Length: 94
Image 1 (tube, helix red, strand yellow):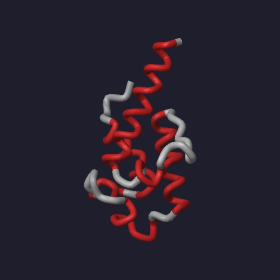
Image 2 (tube, one colour; image 1 turned 135 degrees about the vertical axis):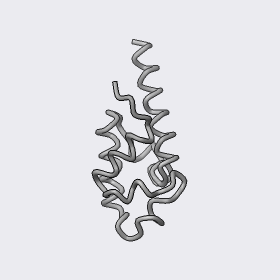
Image 3 (cartoon, one colour; image 1 turned 90 degrees about the horizontal axis):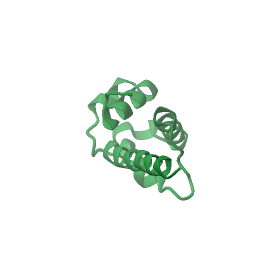
Image 4 (cartoon, helix red, strand yellow; image 1 turned 90 degrees about the vertical axis):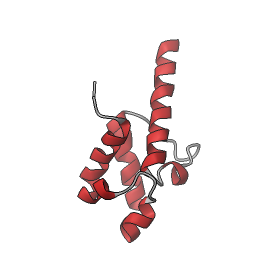
């Protein structure tokens, strides 16, 4: 089991993708504002894919409001936490 918090794991994953500047972003700052033109739609898809891989979750681009949930680290942390909680609930029901 990973001892890092969800936020730490997100920062680590995004650091591999976006570089060390992710360490400087406040958890409430918008990636679009912080990274500027680097955070385009292709980069957003790469971020989502990296988070899916890190946490073994699936993001539904239609039903999950990705523009909202992947705007800040704080929102990503909430989203991932809910997805992980949902997985545990489904596993317990099996």
